[in-house]
Length: 193
Image (cartoon, rainbow, N blue to C red; front, side, top):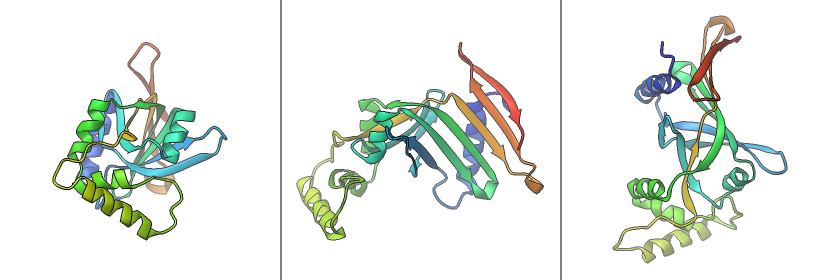
């Protein structure tokens, strides 16, 4: 068993990608706004490594507002078929423009157009309004590349705490925790189930 939390994450994530029937990269993102009200939603992991875990979104959405107000988050990966989960906590920062541009360029064209058409998290009077906006954006960029909207980009969660949870019979689960050490590196220990 690895004493490097990123190597252990890579191993578990590879197993999930091979066995999960849908969205093995789905993770719950928990944020807190200035009012102290927590909020959680599913987002997709689009990059990871020792520098953190990256996801992308509209930077004018409710979640982005909460990230600006309180730039600390929790992530949760739950892979039911493997009976495993990974919890990650730490500060969040903006991914670079170059990184956001590169990922945006890799998205399906319809997803690129949707990023322009959606005022994510804002009230919508009808589905028809959104579909009409999508058609307007589609016509606007017809025949050419779709640039990344200025209000859309990535966020990187830099982990300070990573917990690996393994389901065991009779709820006698196995929990392994890694805490980032002040000078770098990680301390490691077990937790009671």
